[in-house]
Length: 355
Image (cartoon, rainbow, N blue to C red; front, top):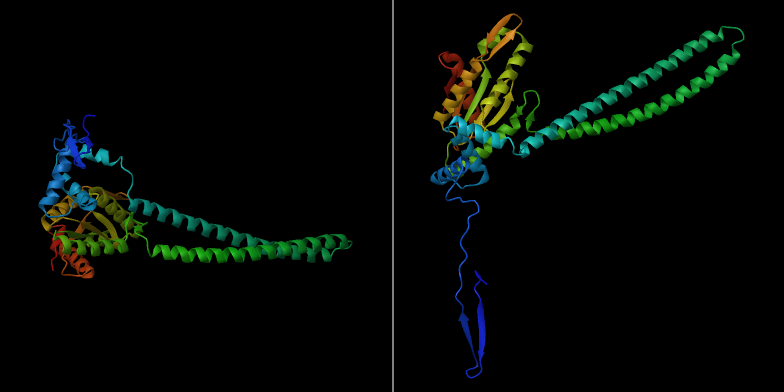
C-alpha cells in the first residue's frame, strides 16, 4: 500500500533470531489545505501581517491580542480592504459581552413588568374597598325606605360576598408584594454586577474600572502601551443651553458618536454625570491623539437643533497613558484633569494629562 511504511518479521530457525526487512515505500505528499505559506486572499495576507506584528512586539498570539492588533492595524489599510473585512465581521456571532447586555436588558424589563403588575393589583384592591363603601352607603339609603327589607337582605348577602372576595384579594396582594420584594432584591444584586449603562447604551463605570485594572496587569506582563480618554460635553456649551432635557439628548448623541468612531477592541463606557470614557488598548499617546482629533471632528460636524436654534456640538477630551506604576483611580483622575485642561485651553478640544 502506497504511503504506509510496512515492516515484515521473518523467523530464522537456525539463529533463533528476528530479522526485519523494510520495504521501499512511496511517501505521501504534504498537503496544506489552507495554503498559509502562499495566501491567496487579501484577508489571509492581512492575517499573516497581524501575526507577524504580534511576534515582532514580543506578544503572545492569543485570541485577545490577535483581535486587538487586527483592529489596530486595520486602520492603516485601504478603505476597500477595511470595508471588505468589516462586512465579514458583521456575519460573526455576537460576543459574550453583547449577550450579557441583552440578558441584563431583558431582566430589567421583566422587573418593570412585574412592578406594573403589582401596581394594577394594588389598584384593584383599592377599587374593591371603594365598592364596599358604596354598598354600605346604598344600604343606608334603602333602610330609610318602607318595604325595603327584601332589598336590604340581598344587599347584606352581596356585601358578605364582596367582603370575602376583598379578603382573598388582600391576602393574594400581600403574597404578590412578598414575591416582588424578593425579585427586587435579586435585581438589585444583579445590578451590582452589571456591565451596561441603559441610559446611554454603552458600558458602565464598574465595567470600565475592571477593564482598566486588567489592562494594567497586561501592561505589567507584556510592556505594551495603552491610553485612556475621558470625554465630556463642553462645559461652556452646557452653560449656554440651560435646558436639562436638551443636554441629556446632546449627551446621548455624544455616546452614539463615540460608538461610531471606536474600534471593536475599544471600551466605551459612561463614567458618570455625562462623562464618557474610551479605553484604547495597545494605543500609545500619539495614536490616542489622532483618535481624539477624529472624534472631535466628527462631533463638531454634528449639529443639534433646539427649537429654532442650531447648536454646534463641542466636547472636551482628556488623554492619559495607562502606566502600571499608578492605580486605576490615579489614572482616571489624570484623564479627568485633561478634560479641565482642554476646557481652559480653548485652542484644542483635547489635552494630555500625564503622571
